[in-house]
Length: 284
Image (cartoon, rainbow, N blue to C red; front, side):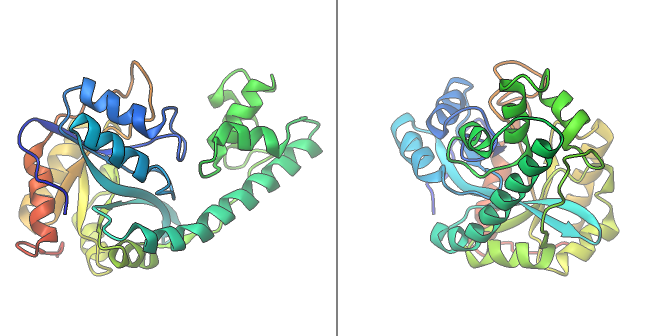
């Protein structure tokens, strides 16, 4: 297990160029150091490729790196994001994630085919260049459209081509929540429901706990003050481990900035205790 944190704040939801972030893992860790954070979790979408580089940078800069990932799964008909934190056996989850990355690449190719049929001259090579070796996602297609002059910005690309119901939209194969939780547990990690917002009800948390979920993200920039207060109260009442972070993708200034959530080191300590078996209490 990583060395325990000593003081200060942590961010337990961060992205790098290993998925759809704009900064390399080393630069993410350097930004964390500059922001005064003592620990971060690198949680790239369906990828753990950035973790070795982040760990090396963390050792050099004195920032604890929690091995993480953010999985996209389905819960009923809705897409749900699930954080895997404290992954012990990264190779186990890497094998599982290989299939998801292949799915993302096939989806990216299908989106490009649709765009070309619409007369938009973008290539899959353009998309791969934007991904920079990371897991391919719609944001990379959007950036390729912007770079090639087919959209004014990423939001325009989604509004005109890539969003649900738009002419180049392609639905992705989905990972079930039970399988996503099992994948994280197989790697020795904690499964934490990401940014549930107003949908983070007592009934929903209990249902996910029955599938093995370990905790809930309480602090997130997408949460209203009421969401944060309610989720924190539910966590105190029901016993899940709490977590939080900005889901930072590398922006130098707003609306999401590194360190903005002021996640206390105590929350990381609770996760360490849960992993050690001191308080592995599910949400009930």
